[in-house]
Image (tube, rainbow, N blue to C red):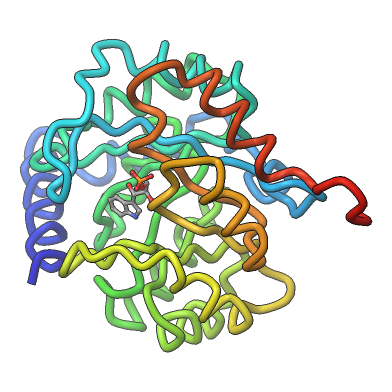
Length: 266
Ligand SMILES: O=P(O)(O)OC[C@@H](O)[C@@H](O)c1c[nH]c2ccccc12
């Protein structure tokens, strides 16, 4: 199972880092950071769709996407283009990211920043905060419910916001059960890599009314943003389409497609 392998690899890499940087040290670093930026406020539902723009060099499904020699610069362009938050892939093996990328991005922008990785241990959550993350991705399919609840609580305790990622109605229920306030639905199944842009629309009504709804993946054109908006998304998370070309212009087109249409009462 691909998701299990990705998670096992990420946990193994974290264990390796823990050899030279023990948990107590990472905890101290995490607690000495400036407080996390308020992601729920930044992503609060508005009349138009908000965008989380992602720094991603490669992925197991798409291979190499862009070299992104300067992730801080890339993130600055996203901020300039009107993104509401930034996502940074920190997984090294298949996505070619790192915690250094995350740290560089949080320094360069004033937006909340998500650590996008395969998180399954408290150590990885502490590392996220120690590197300046404001949000942490938790993938429901990768975690047993008690561990999901434990990590969710730890993210909150550290003042960060968990983005709880789901792939089915059942997983949305599990997110609701732990009181998730920011729920993502990923169009890409992380085990088969199959894309289903309509999954969000099928499960959106299961997301608790007080949670922010995030549609993740498969936005390649402005029409895809409009599609997700019509299906009830408050926020879309976009990677691939932003890492090449002119991200400021692309974001402008995506934001326009997520705005209310003429005649529509906001
Ligand atoms: O590049 P896309 O199709 O715009 O997708 C972005 C984002 O949703 C995707 O990178 C993603 C969603 N969930 C993840 C979990 C792990 C790694 C990556 C992801």
